[in-house]
Image (cartoon, rainbow, N blue to C red; front, top):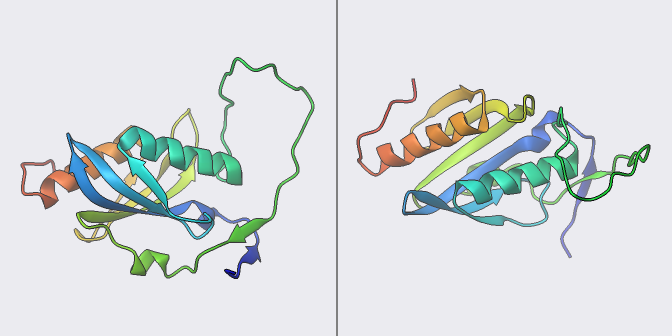
Length: 158
């Protein structure tokens, strides 16, 4: 049985390790690691990556979304869910012990405003850190880093 820690909710909940093992047809394949996820999560492309992270943020309620998505399901007005305890399943050393076969990124999402994300991305092999103002900008930075690491012509991170 794995030991778990119950901790206070903090911004570090959103710090996620993205390990890219392969690139197929321009789409990265790999795993997400977050100490607050019970297990690693496999992703297959940018859409899968963004959806998995967004679902995780919704589940953790951190960072809070500044809008609600429209759905076909009927709304239940006035029902507010109590915050659940946050459980840490992995040690913080996941950020130093896990790496992708191609490349590794550490993403810290600080806000979810204007229907997108704002935060910081660190490219571990390139030893570069860049702020992003949207999920699309984060994806472009990742794509450029993957192209640069494979020797293709890419736009620099600056």
